[in-house]
Length: 192
Image (tube, one colour):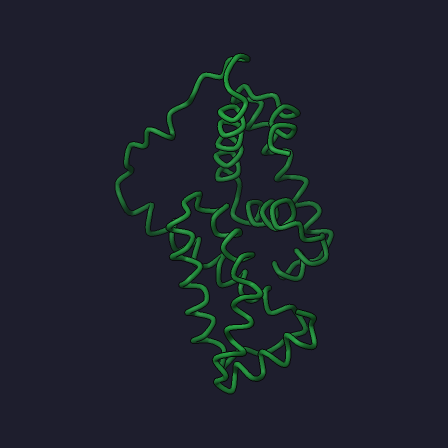
């Protein structure tokens, strides 16, 4: 959907046209789901939070003001807030033991699929240790594939700030993975 078509859909949706909102939903639901899923690492929770994002978007649509940014930028801000709220609530609950969180020794003769999953799990764990802004930049740039300018729009920052944030995030990821004993080049090769 191009920008002009999106604006027409938004105007119709703001007037109560359910089909127009449905079109906006279909256009953006996968991107919002992927963003949340990478932040929470739980498919069912990501589905719930994605539904919540669109419910809140529908509630707030009458007061939405187009500021020249893509509609998805507003959805990402709502999604970011939902993820932050989720982690705030989770901090108040006692931690549960998770068998999946236990480290798995890696040997060269292990199945390639197992190695990939282990590397992906290590990368996701390292990403969760980044600051919220760094996590958002990593997900938007490398998982969603947005360019610097689009990420800057979505996050409400300038392109140079996004570049600096990305640089710090990648440096931090690299050092965290190296401290965990991972070969960064092997992880990158295994995930591609």
